[in-house]
Length: 266
Length: 263
Image (tube, each protein chain N blue to C red):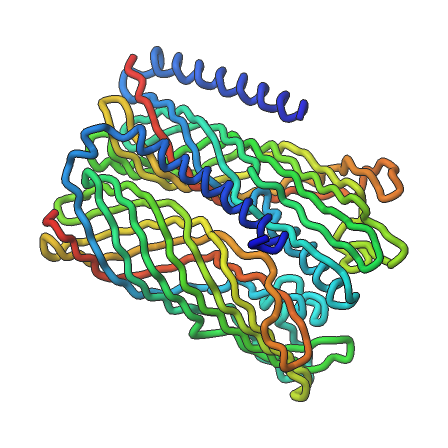
């Protein structure tokens, strides 16, 4: 939680600086063009591409259950996650340059459990969040006064985290562990990966005015990116600290965003 | 107790997202100008036909994963070796058809609801190898789905007889997925799964008006979302399989749209 706060403040400071630069740039650098600030809210699905991993754990639970009568399972569900963001945009003729910030984490918990017959309940929980700073250069297709379709792409700086915890990952009577069912799965009490890296995104959207200075927008952001191999901040089944296995985080995903934008007149 | 424990838990999870989504729509309604509610509305209905490449995505199931060593569904199932006659199995190409209705507010905003049916018509069958010997495996898949997307979008007129809209929202999707694996032409294992999910939905649509009320439409929609694992409903083979229903993918459609009021 403390780490999340630190990152949030770092991104906020970066964003404020960029906003100030954008302001100065607009005021002294160009005589034409417009600057707009916007707030976004929307949703995403399969945050940090966890669906595949959750599905593997679910398959392992059901496979074990099918081969061991009396096992109880509760599958991990992959929820939608709300997205909140803000952005600053400078537009000039048919081009725009935009810097945004998005934060997303699921409202609902991603958890499930398996209780082997005669064994102890092993609760598995996945905690994820993602903060991104997408920087976009794109084209505006003007359709009227402040009515646009826009399409753009650019790099995204991601700060993401995945933490998977299990309450009783290794049991001897009866013999149970996820790793013994599927070697790609973990039998640690905690596997935690946090990293910052650069990916890229594609953005498509539309915007129309609702007031002299306000517009509303609808946009879709598709992003892709893989982190470098990140060290595990883990705890083994024997409570020993772990640094392995190293893994990369995949941020491939789609964001559906609705926004309200304010055009600053200097 | 009305629901079993696990179902009640799911119910609560669904409601939380529903409250959030309702809140989001309310937020934007709040920011719309007051005079919006006094302007006349326009309504339109239409129909369309199209294709859905990669319907059902990789069609993964537990049997493929653990018994045929394919961690990527139908994609990982294709194998070949000299001396064996195999046939590549492709992902399903689906045919999609639907009807839609929409309310245009202020001529620039729209709420759109639709009913779609999609079914795989090509692909989804082949012959591959499995095991260390190896042995021949014939496989066959089918996937059908209905969905009701609910999207909100922005409509922008382009020249005088074209409208382009960009819409985002979610859909209620229900699917039926079957698979069949025949080992060495002798033993056949069948699976049958059905269930629902709520994929995210994005729709880009263009309309060309051939009269002042009738338009030809072309649209590209994108779904993203899948279900939890469902238990095999086919019992006669004595085998139990598990699979999720994946509704993610693109759909391209063309159709017509009738507006109740002239544009």
